[in-house]
Length: 153
Image 1 (cartoon, helix red, strand yellow):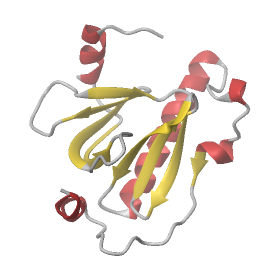
Image 2: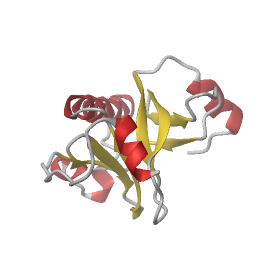
Image 3: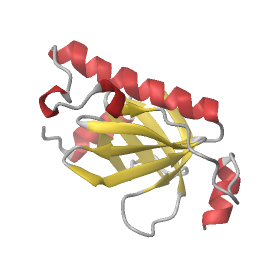
Image 4: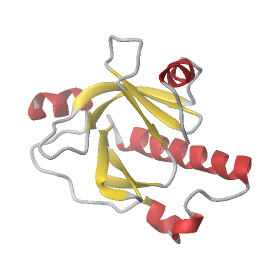
């Protein structure tokens, strides 16, 4: 699918199904979590600097795997390149579960619109797409985003 910059910017201004400031870490090795405003609009996850109106980027939520990484955190990786993984840190386990459920609904919307599961062609099971494994708490990190960012910066 191709989108131009103006189309994406216009879409990013639409009402979001869900939006919050989260810690976000990109796929580059050694990247640290940064505070980002994250907005789910249809099947795009836009991310912004908290004080800016234009998005820094967007993740198209097709052919992706959402997994719980640690209590209060989840990741999104892509089937084409599993090493391209984005990590998100929430303020609580409840907020993390809300985000994971909203991402599930976004994928289901694609299924309703197209009549097909976007990952069906890759033979990826529902369980693999939305892993809810409980991982042990990482020592030295707290559940609230502000504290996590202070530790990581």
